[in-house]
Image 1 (cartoon, one colour):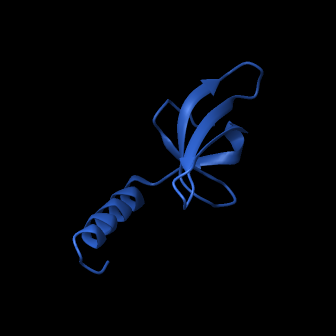
Image 2: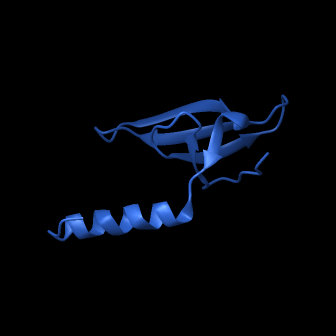
Image 3: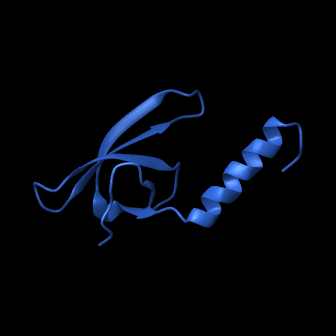
Length: 78
C-alpha cells in the first residue's frame, strides 16, 4: 500500500474529484485518511476514507490540468 502524507493528492479508485490528504489515521488498522475537496460551487467537504480506496494522482496529469486552467484564465482555449 502507498504511504500517504498530508498534502498528497489522491483520487477514489472509482473516480471523482481530486482529494487532498489532510491527516493519516493509522489506528485502527487499516489506515484511514482524512481528505478534503471543493465541489463545483467551491464548497469545502471533508470525509474519512480507507487508504485502500484511493490512489495517488499522476503528477503529469496534475501539471497538465494546472497549465490548462492558467490558459483558460488568460483567455486561451485549452
